[in-house]
Image (cartoon, rainbow, N blue to C red; front, side):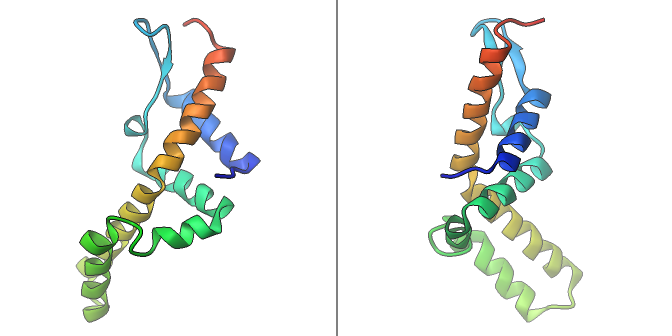
Length: 125
């Protein structure tokens, strides 16, 4: 997976803002579960901008949430395009689906940036 300077910079800022020092491991740690949904969505969007073919995959049956959440939400929305709840449900399902699909890539990127962060900050302040 390729990551632009902008994507890496955003990942670095997430690590710097959310990593916590673990005295047992003697290093800083952070996981995607520690990050806000809107940060994960932005990181996923940057990963997709850097990797357009991967973005295309995220919106189809290669995504395990496609059949379970994304397509049903789309069909409900298409049947009721003026229904506010259908609109919100569609947006939420697709945000969740495409963000979930990028999870492995985002974990990889955060781990890379966490390694750099730990090398630059070997001990807690």
